[in-house]
Image 1 (tube, rainbow, N blue to C red):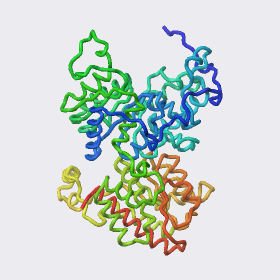
Image 2 (cartoon, rainbow, N blue to C red):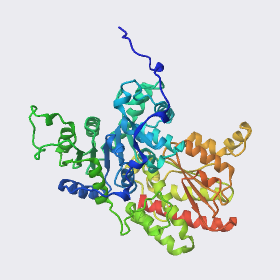
Image 3 (tube, helix red, strand yellow):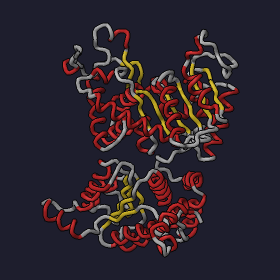
Image 4 (tube, rainbow, N blue to C red):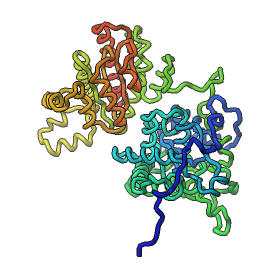
Length: 556
């Protein structure tokens, strides 16, 4: 029989600005302001193992509860992300809510004790309305929960987005998955709540999380204060990964919590003891690591354990400042070359060779390195590089696509698996012996039939590139626009479209800032304003970029 239920559309909300919050901007801990740390042998060992995983380019997954954000530790996590010590972030619904509110108003965490008495607890209008709007928009583009929130914060230009972990994860292309429990979060009380969309978004994130776990072999899984969601989600994801045939062994787990456990916590515990029911000990520290892994429990306040982890992984330089990150517009050439070399020695060598041959373009190298890192990360995740320009710049766009789709400086050998597939269909072995490995790069604007249809049908010029991106681009792709002046209207529309579709936008231009550069995540400027001189510099730069990408993916 159908049971009675309440109508959430009748719930009364109030403006978020009226809510008294317990956590404010002044409570956030900056990475360069860390003063208190702790000494713990297990933590030191975990740091060593994280460094080893980082050196070996193995995954480092970070699961957390909401108190990491509420304790003001988000910026420390962001710094670890920027330095490559986090490859995936996961959390419950409250993690997303508190981080979202900090980005929106610079405050979060209401006083539950007082607001529960009058029915106003969790009833702030903007939090629920905006998160549900973000999820509705994201699910249409096949995004998960976390990426939908990150994209919304970025595209809506939230005032305090720089303190948001969601925002930085989106910008850095690091998966941030939200694993919601229906009925557990304040946004589930909101009149706009659509549980179908919530389930779809969080379910998609679970599948993303499972994929990350399939790659966890010899990696690291860290859990910070998630006592139920984290352990249960991880255990199910690990079972799925192994069920699908993935080898996931020899990884490290570490559980960080205030909860005390016995010194011999690896030994079986009687069900008569309360610690038996502590999920993180069973489902993170012990059960998952049975196949050649190691599990650790580190007791302590997050405000001590996480800063200690940061300090021992990254540390500070002699001036007490934290190491610079790749999002900052720095001219420290050696810093960027080091970041590139951490990813690919061949790519770094190509950049150094370019610097020796073209010292006059030294100021463009930091942005070029950032462009390389963004494109390489996109290619790794199955993304596509879309290129566009006008006149000579269109020829340059075609030039780049050509260098990436086949061998440039070095012969690119097809993988054996692809060769075998070709040989099954081509008995003369022409395909397997002739074709080369390539990277997915597409030049826009080369379809005259489409161009004429757009010009005839739209009643508005300059939309050709934008229409192609609207049809072809997916979240995580990269749009690379080339304009010597930075004034091309069709590239402006294309850049706007790319941003709306969740793509990374890179601009190659002259020395002047322009309207086009406002829409770019990375602007590569070269000295000069005369078209032919700017184009000559562009050729040298994109040859270097192609060499870096080829060195990264195909080696020598």
